[in-house]
Length: 544
View 1 (tube, rainbow, N blue to C red):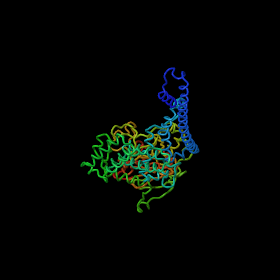
View 2 (cartoon, rainbow, N blue to C red; view 1 turned 120 degrees about the horizontal axis):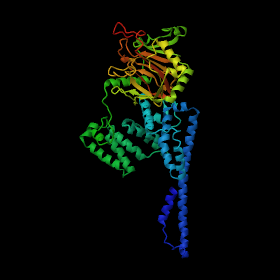
View 3 (tube, one colour; view 1 turned 135 degrees about the horizontal axis):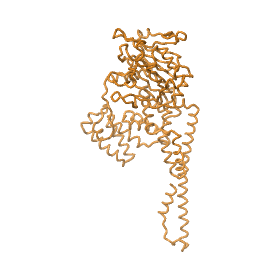
């Protein structure tokens, strides 16, 4: 295509009259000049194509190098969230750039067509996946207090390194995805880092103007109008005819001269309502109560491993061999750790073998679907940003292993499994988490388990099927405890008091997986069938 365009340009430049060349030698000699121009044009074309091909070769070499490294141990490589983000970006943003290059000629188009025909065999991430990967990195950054510059250098907690540092383009894309989500705080963090990287790069990976455009408006939305105006002026030096920048500049000047600018101020975090109404950005819900903030702080603190029990509480905790309540445990007692009292929360060690873990994973993986939550108003199941994982459900008849695991839960808890839900298996991906929630249905969720006809979820039995290198704890914000995944162990607690009321202290969360992968399986045990196994207490206020 580029060669055809070049030749058409030459034709436009040199349009001889019909039969006016061969009739005189003087005109024939001028053809040599024409041929010389043609030669130089083709030479320039070849040089340009060779430069593009050379760049493509370098990009391909880098992709092959990374691919070979990742293929040695895919799970270990992708356990690093920065590596995982860069893979998604390569197959979305970077792949789009490659496609644009390859469509310059018919051979490239044919190769793309062949690749497209394999779509059913290949899995391509889309814009939603890219946004999810970017948001996951922000979640990890906030929860674990990760420094932006350290992340850009590929470092997590100063010890774990990605296969390379982020480029200005990588940082820009993180900022762009934050902007598209209406998150101007993270936009400014990552666009500033993109600027820092841009200044260090010999071969620029993104344009200076593009960074400034996003950074200027997000700075404005953060409340710093003067800095936004300064950045916009820099943008207009770079691109004087940038229409949006010209419009924004006028708007910022107006804002500085208005009463609204005084309310915003450089140290304010209020959002200019007028800017939202004019469609510059999306508004965010900031009307969240203090209780939510307190719980959030406790949740994130526990995820970082900063929670400590009071000495008078910790001294009551202990370990022992549990020999009941069933005869099976008299023969083979289980190692039991009491991690909290009232509500009682237990960790059972070595209750799931490696072979059982492997079988459960193998059975569950083919039927994995995005994990859902129940809308308490409609009762419908739906995906939610506060629960990121994939899960599937295994019936007892699916495998002898599942039957054996169900029987083991019954032996340890002494509860009836006939009315329990199927064994749920979950795998947490990039930044996978489940924010604070109750396992039981609250009073306003009257129809939550109506279709099951088995009452509320009386207890939870949670198996850990993998170790997690960093993050991924199960935390109880109101109890100030964190349970760290250990392959083969299981956590157990009652969700309901003996009188059937929900125990609000069992509100818990799955912290984001920082490095590694997290596999769990759980059994939600229901009230029906437990009447004589865990009877109602004579005292309505009884805790156990």
